[in-house]
Each structure stands twice: as C-alpha cells, then as structure tokens.
Length: 333
Image 1 (cartoon, rainbow, N blue to C red):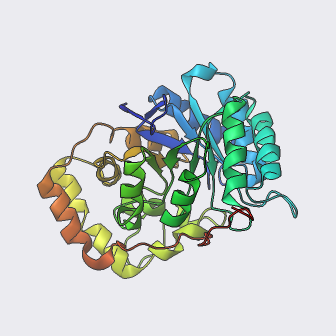
Image 2 (cartoon, rainbow, N blue to C red):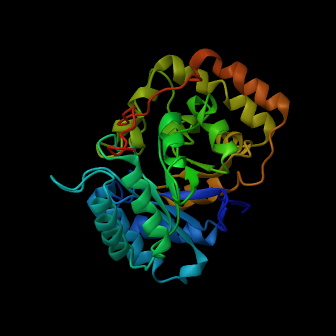
C-alpha cells in the first residue's frame, strides 16, 4: 500500500482509505463492520474517515470500539462536524465545534483525531469564528490538522485569509471518472495552498464497478437495492450513463484490471489526491480495492476512458449537495 503526505502536515496516509458513511452507520451489521475494518488494517490501510452525523454517532462508536484495540499510532482517524446532531446542535459555531469534537473523541475512544473536517460550510456563522475554533482544536492537541468538505473556492479563500488561523491540510470533494467538477477550480486552488484532496465516492456509489447493467433491476445484494444505503446512488442510475460505464469494461480487461481497480487508479493518477475513500460491506471488497494502489494508467488508457464516457462526465463547477454558497464575516471586520 503506497502512502501519500496529507497537505503540509506530517501525516502519511494510505492512498486507499476506508469510509463509514452509508455502511457502518447502520447499513451493515456489527460483524461486517468489524470484518471490513480489520481487513483494511491487514491490507495496509491506515486512514479511516467518519463523521459525527453518520448514524448520529453510530459509526464513530463502532470504530471507537474496534480501532481502540489497535495501537493508536498505527492508524490515522478523521471525523467531521456540521450536520445536525439534534434539533439544536448543528453548524460550525465555536460552541458547536468544541462540543461536537469532545463528543466525537468520546465515541471514538481517543484523545485526538488526526484530521478534523468541516462537513460543509456554515453560512450562518462568521468564518473568523469557525477558523478560530478550529485553530483552538489544533492548539489543544485534540486535532492534529484540519480540513473541509465541499467548500466553494470563495469559502476556501475566506478560511485561508483569517489571520493567525491553522492551515488546512485537506479538502474532501466528491470525485470520480464521471464527477470531475473539482478539477475545474478546487484542485488548483488547493494545490497552490498545499491542501490535499481526499475524495469521496470514487466509484460513483458503486456504479463504476459495472455491476448495474442498463435496463435491468439492481442486484438484490447491491447498494442500489438497499433501502438504507441506496438513496445517494439515484443520480447515477440513468440508462445512458450505465451504458457508458459498460464501455469501460473492455478497457479494464485490456489493462489487466478490474473495473474497480481501473476507477481507483484513475483517481490516483492525480498528484493532488492523497487518498480515495472506499466503502465496503465485505472484506473481499477491501482486498480487491487496495490492489489499485501503485497502478499507473497509460495515456492511451486515459484517452480510452474519456472516449468511452463521452459527454456523461460533469466537468464544470457545481455546488455540492447540501452545500450553500456565500460567506459570513464578523461585524466590524
């Protein structure tokens, strides 16, 4: 398993990492969660990404129980804050950042997280307040470094401009062969500021595995057929897009790769990417995915991918789901 440096931090993380969004927050059982987590560690994955909101704390609790059995220095742990945890607990105010970080640490059974991320931008809280609270988290030792997910370029620049604030180590956008929107603006802005990308949905919610033939119902054991995990896959389940994905299969075959390995190697071709976050419901999925580490795709393969997908790709800047544009500043700034 290759490792890459996370931004300008001292963290070296596995270029394939394990996430817990739709899976370990309740989508799969406790035994599967443990089996996949242990498989990840065995395969060389050392970076685990979760959020307080996943299962309203359930994902953090599961990993707190499982990962705490391993030496703390053997893995890097990332979590997030922003989305509602109760009717009154949400956002990125100083009060919420302090409260939610302490709650996450308790559930994760650790004194610190390696990466603390803003799950979205809070347009209702002054950016100065948010950045000062994040800086406090770093200076207290409760977070080794900070990051954000799905901020707009304007919001990223606003965070970077707060005097004396801790610097960002990471950005977490949706990014895959189909969804290429971050390439338009975010990648370059982050590169200029030593901010790495740790990307979610690298397999387009599983669509890039090729297991969803157009015009057919999804396999019974697939994410698309699961009531708890299937919602986010909806935008990808169009027959024209699924047909385009099937055109990738001979490209993968000729390269001697599985569809999953082709998709992950495509992500990792970008030096801006520190890690691709996978989801897994079975240990064998973890082992298959990690085989993409170190794979280099030729320009001919990259060109063939572009031709196969054609106009199915999203290349222009798009405001992320559940994100808001704009920035609030402190009065008198």
